[in-house]
Length: 344
Image (cartoon, rainbow, N blue to C red; front, top):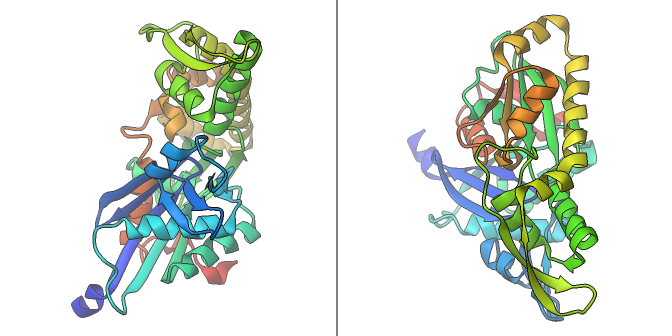
């Protein structure tokens, strides 16, 4: 058995719209943006992850940057394969000769059968011999230390880059779920549109992302107010670059409609929850994971709306990949929550 283990390479992948994380031997070995830069002339990979992100929106005609995932699923099949291969090659250990590769990949709960097949096919192209999929909310629940096999209801809200996944989990299964395509990318777009409409200034995706990180807020009144953030962009009236200061109150106003959509989805999921599980959720509260959980005041806003306690995971960005890693180590025990190729 030990000899077989020597030839086995096991990786858990959280294939996210914004970031892809890979765990090997219980450690996060890759944490990179989900983006690839290609040479238009020969379609060869120039850079993957952070290096490609530095090129994003700054390229000339011979280079294109592609984000292969949109709304949590593979939108560009060819670029996704190249990106996964590039990220797997970043893992320190060289892939051994005749190695048997085993993968667990995380997917949104609202994904179609065709989209599941696309993920399996991508894994096949990077020589994975044994591939399993796991739903994001289930992985997040494992990652924050919940016992998903118990007959107790827990509600997970995972706000990622492309999708917000809301699920009630009990007895190793998802009892009811809501998957909406309003998440981090939508928040970024809201900020870009607000700056254009309100300040007549054109900013890029990366700048909007920085605004979200530095002064992003779900509430217009915060106890610990962040300092105003200086934003550089192009003045739409004169065409000349300029700088303005943005406050967290403006960002809260810009994000208000999108956050309301997330709140509505949470309420819909609560309406669908069977009464016995609803009583469990009243006791345990809601668990927030994903990058969106870091938005200032979001837990308080959801708590005000639902009248339920809201807990933010300890490391919300890595909760999903940690759970995927746990599923990888316990594939036999957790067979009930994993999806293999035969089941689609």
